[in-house]
Picture 1 (cartoon, helix red, strand yellow):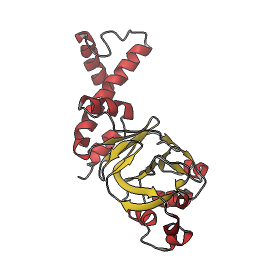
Picture 2 (cartoon, helix red, strand yellow):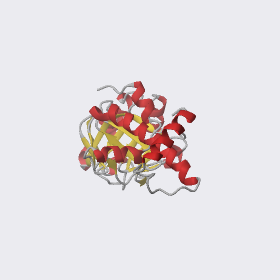
Picture 3 (cartoon, one colour):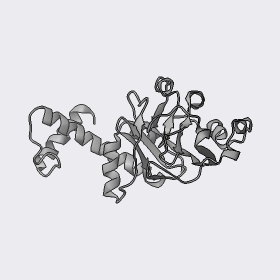
Picture 4 (cartoon, one colour):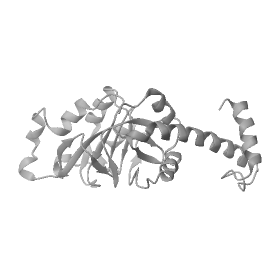
Length: 239
């Protein structure tokens, strides 16, 4: 399924926290990628893109010397050149950050190609350099050793696990300062619409609470009077 421009734009303006609640209402409890943090989070909008996956297995020494990078079909290098613009590369590194999943040069190439972001449950080398790039990036922690030390790139664009979350190619990845969440592709439109509505109400609630109002009856809105106030607030603020 192709991510609609309208859906992408909505998802850029909502938080992973709000999306997690919307997913929970539908019975999804394991969509947040665990153990990753932003090197360079989106400056204003959330990172949004369809998942393009890369899977590592434990390296076998006789198959993982430096010469493998001379092969243009090497899965890691091929993925960097084929990950579509606007997508998010998601790497299954088995939650092992002892060796890097990628480094500054490859992430720079993804940025230059228009990729929206990169996520690994392992680590990046050149982490300070990556943090300064204009591409959203998430990892567990910095890691200097080359990926060949422990990781063997084996598959591109197959279902993977990343930070204990299931990621299928084409799922929608949203990332913000809290981390990254995986939206099943077929639910993206509905989740974007619901989260947009939730965000409007949450912004209204935040404004009321900052003004000194209690949360009882307001959050959640069990007092109908608050819904009337919210309607007026939406009209006033164009929300």
